[in-house]
Image (cartoon, rainbow, N blue to C red; front, side):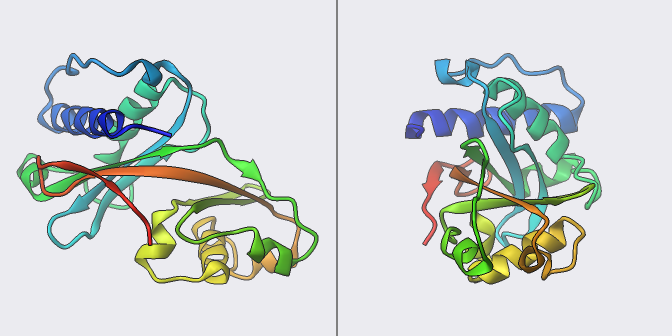
Length: 198
């Protein structure tokens, strides 16, 4: 989907936006590749280094904004992820930035839970599960990082939505999948690599 150069541009832009937001500086003047004018979904993740612990992750799964706008909004919001204290200036040299560029979500059509499980692939798919007012999303890297199988992935996505873990087995919920390409700093301010999920 994306070239290494485009992935690198996304992560560098996210880093500059995050640093400007945390320091209270003016929004940085950034140049983006042409494809960033297209509407796309994106998530920006901030991880502690070297532990890899999550420090913030916010994004837009639907392609409702131009990528450059979605990237800016996600990067700024990730510094104030409600699950954590706001990111401080002292932490900027102790975190790595990761950007996941997403395909549009696609609803999974299935007749039974066996077929559903067969249509989900850990390491490739991200999931969105919604039922009534509840909605939860997990990125493709999450089941790999946690060593989950497909059934566990579905259960944890339900829990992310605030639903019981077996909701996906009971029917009545909408389940969508999407794919993502992940680009990340190897070290704080360091080289940017494309992350391959095993």
